[in-house]
Image (cartoon, rainbow, N blue to C red; front, side, top):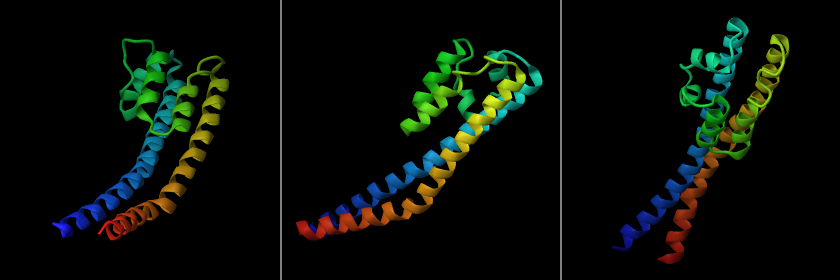
Length: 155
């Protein structure tokens, strides 16, 4: 029975560390999907010159954009999807702010506005990749050692 509890503590620590590492990898995937969404919107806006609902309708193949409700207000739906989709608050804010200036200028202004957000997303994605590569193994090993230390202290 005591051996089972020791193994359970070690396994629990390992799982907690793996969960934190998974959150970091998930952030990278979320930002990559959002980056693809912005690129799709840029292409669609440049060639269709349509309004926002039309642009979003043409970009339904992206996982982030597929979550936006077609029948509702696109800005409100975008904001709601941003809150639900991203796990990190800074990424939520970045995604929600994207539509604040969308469609307020002519095509050249819109494309430069999208390019600005592309660079912001690229910086956030690079930071997320660096954090994932530097910390994923650390979190897993730290969880394993914490579980082992807790098992040694309690037994």
